[in-house]
Length: 150
Image (cartoon, rainbow, N blue to C red; front, side, top):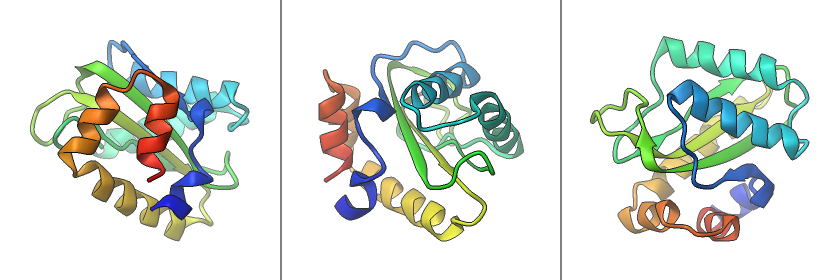
């Protein structure tokens, strides 16, 4: 996992203590953070792509995890942003629980294999309860990055 995520995720890609009122608000907050970190060129177009993908099927999984993702011509490489929502936000999850950990994954149309591989890797990591607990209770962005870049 380390080799795959270390390049992708740094502290500039993390939003702590989010208080979104909706999943759209949460996704927008992560995209805005990625834009401030100069990871994105056209945040509005990316938001449109992610929300369109979300309209096809919710990316709210179980156990407080949401993995919104989209393929877009607006990025050249895999771009990942993480939002930590201590009080949760409704993501139409499979178990009807609010999402506390949101991992936004963006990729170009040419990087489908990296996109799928990352989704599989992050899903596996987040399947561990102790990892989820440490992420939700992280006090700093560095703690989140350390946990993800194991």
